Length: 315
Image (cartoon, rainbow, N blue to C red; front, top):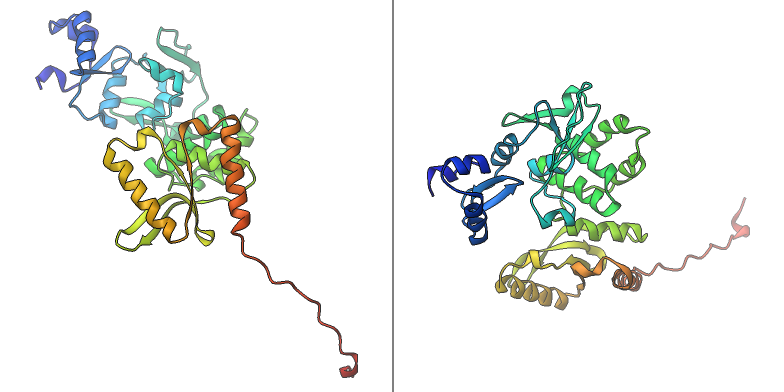
């Protein structure tokens, strides 16, 4: 790796190093360079840490702007960009404060926002909304599935707590989405380990079903302790998200199948949710299956009888 590739570089900087825009595009196609943001490049072997993300943002930020929303989440290591935005380089979400002018530039979504001093943090010289402020902003702006996923992710990755979220609530009073934020805070859980896992839990909650426990550990003979995405331990029912992003190798798939086979022998029932199962009849199908199996495995309650009064014993 040459010295020019270890830090983020703009196209202007690459050109100064003798690399044309056409050559840069070719290096991206070959996998030698990766496009971190719109107009910012990095060598493929460089680990994209929070510090590297901040350095990349510093190349593009308008003067006086504060990074917010999806870009702030990206900086904090919570990648929750809308699916459509992943088709190309990421645009920037920034706001002006203290009466500053709204940023108007291609590739930058500018706005104005009332931010308090403690809601603005600095990372690598970049001003960014704090983790708890970023999470609450996005939870008000996004649909329920993605909102819960964002709250979960900031708890998991940044150590934000429910108490932190509750303390932020008064700042959002009267704002669109505040009611959703208040409700979802109570369901947020740091144990969730993926966005789609949070989606599954949100659909279960919205269907009026009991809330499953995330990351359930079960001891399996000959395999040791194995983990389930979501589970109802008393009824031995597991719900798991099974996406291509979870299985990078054939060994991962085989390991999952072996684990599930062993747990089924112990009486566990599995419902597996895939990427295409979040809409329409496919969504209704697995929720219906879950409802039925939970009902079938509910403990039967003994019938209660009123005791007959023995009046003769009264004094």
